Length: 157
Image 1 (cartoon, one colour):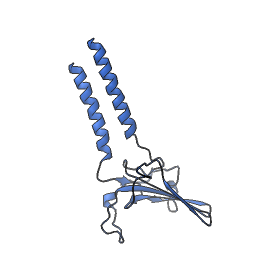
Image 2: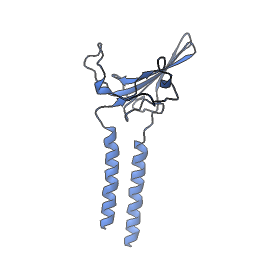
Image 3: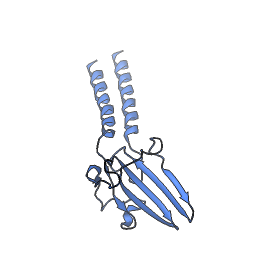
Image 4: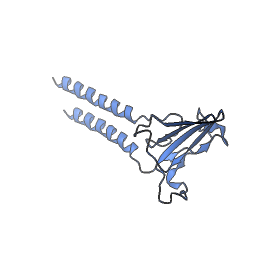
């Protein structure tokens, strides 16, 4: 009975910690432009970049009260040339309707295309892949809890 309680407490702690990681107040994002640093393009190479703490980013003149609370990645195709911008974001919402797997896409005349992705799930989420491990961690912790509970139950019987 005691080992079952310890397992349940440990698994519950893992689940709670996985949610706590997502709920931080400050986020760190990659900041670069592919027109001045080719490593900013996809596939993203952050080996020479340092991640930026968004609470340290200079406020925008036109948004004096806004705080940078998200990361963004913009991918543009202008006249056949791809450009990438990664930075802290001051406005908007993560992903589309809160789902970071989706980005806003726009196209225009004169061969112009833009993809605008925002996220706040984890530090550095504006790298090439926007999916985070937290959901997987919750499923694994829940499965482990169920497994250990079942093992403890049959061990007692």
